[in-house]
Image 1 (cartoon, rainbow, N blue to C red):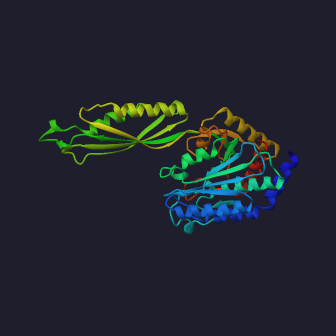
Image 2: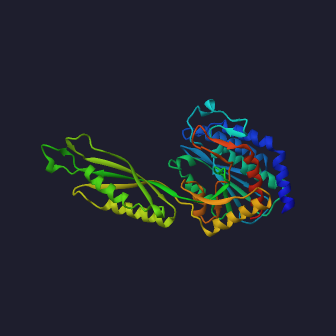
Length: 386
């Protein structure tokens, strides 16, 4: 492995400027949630790079959001592939690049919309494969699966199902999401969901005919108390009724009220507990004559810290030690990512393998330039050991 690691190191070091140039071009191509054309332009740029490197590519179209990009490096191996996953979109509004273009400051930090989350990570993944090509690696094929709407949690597309279909059967997956300055490697993430409740009551004048009314607001209030009572913070079982809207005035018994609740869960078991609890509350009538309709508007499953995930992390940790990268450590975070899709599909996955930095999703977002190169070496050498 030492000879392979050295070739990987030499390849990355010889292509530092290429990597920086691609990073710049990706960041300066705006790809916010309302910019399907921009996300697809990032897709096209990556597709050209991948095809030039001998990969076959496929675009899976999405009507309202950025398309999914799938690329395969067929190196002759018949084994299960190594998967490299991530996304091409950002959270930023149109015009962000004009105000905050890609640049590297005097401290060696790169700035720009999406520089950290996660366009630097995409560059790392691509050049990790190129480094393995330089080695003549042929142990396993490699497959990229990149989404175009991760930042909006696939609410307007079927990309989540598409990605699940594409990653199923993989040997292992690396997600090149935001890396952490302290070299934490993500081995677990909470899942999340948005659940809404539409409560129908009977509107009536509160002074003239109160007996004819059935208050949707009163019904919703009972439901909120029951829903919030499901919280079990020590277990990571979380529900927050964060949005409530109902009624038209103080002199009218409310005929309608709506609730929107955010759910978080570290395991599939706790997810099912929450969903069952929500359904039970929706079906329970507290104010006679009211009716409630529950809708699950979005679900991202948890990235559970499975035995397979732990073993893959240990391989990354061992690789980091072998190549002189330095110590890494495992940890779990609350934010969701597409890593959950792979883990639910049965593929061991580690996340947070991208460039290191801070303040993603804000105008202060920055990434440590040197980590673009060190993480590419780590990823390539870890992939070769699977």
